[in-house]
Length: 601
Image 1 (cartoon, rainbow, N blue to C red):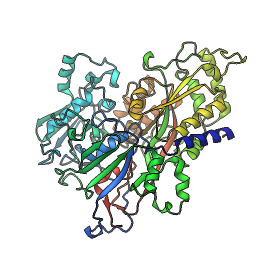
Image 2: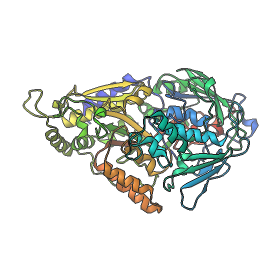
Image 3: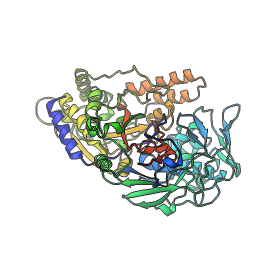
Image 4: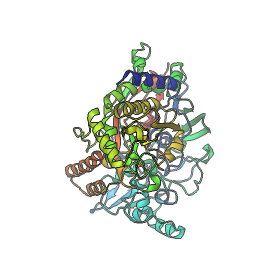
């Protein structure tokens, strides 16, 4: 780390001070769990504060969407998880348990049919009954190619899904249909049916041992036909423990208990209000906590060490490992020329990141441990693959491209030759500075600027890029979610948390055409190994196949793997009943908001 990089990082922190929320990421960060009780809690009504309101920070901007089938980010999913429940859910110990279903599904002998029975008397927050047909509609909306939902690919195992999505939306090799009449006809055969109002039958094209976990995701929560808008609080209906009571856009969202939630499918909330505050950044949220205006908060990386050294705050620290990964996308340019950013210094005018040796060079030039120490306050673990610790398929010792600046420079020299780069600046040598400008994107106000600055400077000092080589820019998170997969950036920030603890969920991010494959990586050998793993019944053999697939993607330097997460929270001692999990979204314990209670203080 050069003195210049330390100084540049310090400048980035100054720019950032007063700007960071609980970093929004693609996908719901994490899974895993342990229970935690507030200080002094005994659980009786006499121990409760009169005001059962919890004040939380959500994000710098509104949720990108409140449509469960369209949601893909932790900000949106934090609200959806609190207000919606599907047939199945996870308990705090990662056991799959019934939610709106009365029991786990009955599975056919060939493993291809799952039959669920609904609990009796289920109702939405508006009093309408929840019926099996609402789950059919959820599947139809998820798979409708006209909606292009980013998580549609997650349901590719459903019978009929491949015909609807095709290669364009991450299912198989066929064409994605565009004719309305054809789509409407195909939607009648999604693989989810309702023979009566209390029975949901799920038909798979092949046995998939993990599909119950997929059914526990927010995308399979029930959707009544009457629900057509998601823009205002009055539009939203709830099938979970809370409902949206008010929504002051870009200011706050208030949740209150769902009056139709009777506890048969989970805990009845003690909280009377969840006040999600919107606006500002993570440092501003931390300042709000210190002023007594929030009850829990994520500690941004720039303040991790300060908080630990503060005698008034250190007793309130809770560190929580996350089944989550920080990584950065390289535009692999393997999913169509329209998604490959232009670059002036390559012979074909396309992004240098399409070149494997170029991606290897960028990977080996980064000191990942230093990246974690300086930009995350030392919290986290170096990542060299997509599957996280604690999930079968985690490949702890495989690292073909360790930090090695000399090796990185050698890979860059090969890449420049392969890219046909010439001396464009007249200095008599062909270097990375001759490649022209690479667009480097991230979402604003979420604590990413120091990390982007760290990477850009590591590449300048280690690989010879010029001061002007990187066009670093940010945009709001909803816009960034659209721009990133569209191929606007050569390099872009990304992150992921396990939707469920299975290698399929993480490696899906690298499948050709997958809705969350923002790098546009597309290697048939990887896809073949990944798809073969899904059909293997023996757990050990399946895990070995997933490791084989992951190593193909790692060998390709498909993305820049950086860090498996640990999040530091501050929690006021009067916040009781917390059930922290490594799948928490924006706040500690927010997967089980309904168990939280405010103690007398």
